[in-house]
Amino acid sequence: MANSLSGFGYFFRGLGLLTQPGLRRFVIIPLLANIAVFVLMASAIYQAMSGLYIEYSSNIVGDWEFLSWIVTPLIWLFGTLLSGYLSVFIVLFLTSPFHGLLAERVEEHVTGERNVNQSSALQTVLAIPRGFLREIQKIVHYIPMALLVLIISFIPAVNIVAPFLWILLGAWMMSLQFVDYPMDNHRLPFREVRDACSARRSTSITFGAVVAFVSGLPILNLFLIPAAVAGATLLWCEELRHLR
Image (cartoon, rainbow, N blue to C red; front, side, top):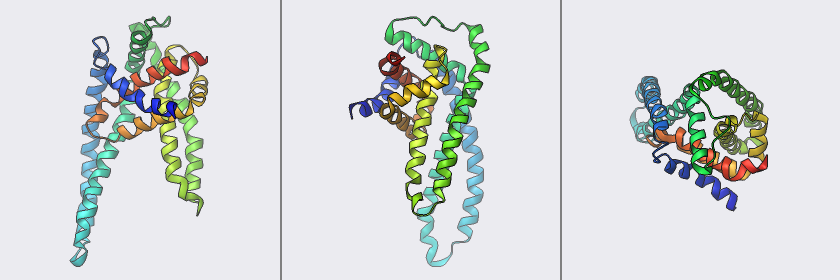
């Protein structure tokens, strides 16, 4: 139980770390990128949802008009949440080199130790192909589990657990996504990221659940990525690093 509660706390502790003088600058570029992508995604989804809403509302007449008071807020809520989720994943991909740098600085701030693999500007550029490879490894890890849950979703009676499994899978992948940054700084293979998170499964999943939930909250999700990177680095420093 205590480990689970610490998993919830890592994200908010990471959010608090972003106000530290040496860390604030690493928030600016992901924040600006997140705002730009969110505006573009929200605009595109707004256009699509507007067409859907017009078609829907034109088919509601008479005694059924009261449904518009229920369905309309749900349509716009869905559009806002979808914009938030998609913008977070796009920005994660586009700004990944900055996340590794932030993880380095957070670890140095927490432990007082400099990473022997600390990145220079040239090393950061050269690390971009490796970062893309790591993202592919995460996708390869995710697809079989997602397909299994998708199959379960279509099995009568058993599919009652499918929503829970989707939430659990999303939390697990969010945990792997962000814990990967500090561990990649130490040149640890993705296999070890999975093993480390598995060793602290309840903590990792609760941390990932908070990240997944916040990713759908407007405004707050703009700060999600740096806060999650800082929180995952705290998790690495305090619970995962000594497992190696």
